[in-house]
Length: 105
Figure 1 (cartoon, rainbow, N blue to C red):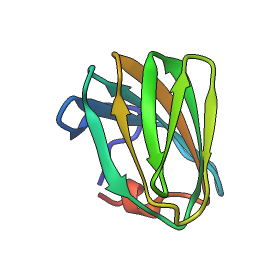
Figure 2 (figure 1 turned 135 degrees about the horizontal axis):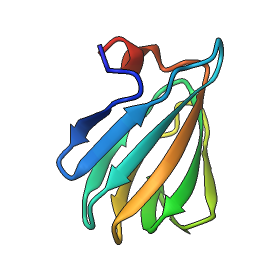
Figure 3 (figure 1 turned 30 degrees about the horizontal axis):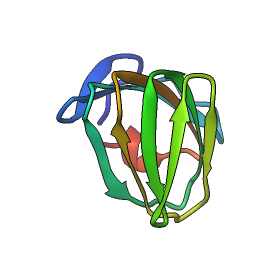
């Protein structure tokens, strides 16, 4: 099971901290080293991602979308998506409903 409110390694160069969830919504901070990647995946949850620092290139259903500090990206339910940090970056992911798969790792 993932640890709530503690940093953990997610992928090489990527760490995350899952915040205590609500009943239907949750959020997670993610920190990337420059060049680190979040592998492509999909899930039934709707996702909003806010860039706190840096610059990231997302692939969402084979379309590239670059966001920088202060910008947001919406990832629809079941959309295939991955990300690469173009510089050291930090983001805030918000999911609804709860990502039980993350809460039960």
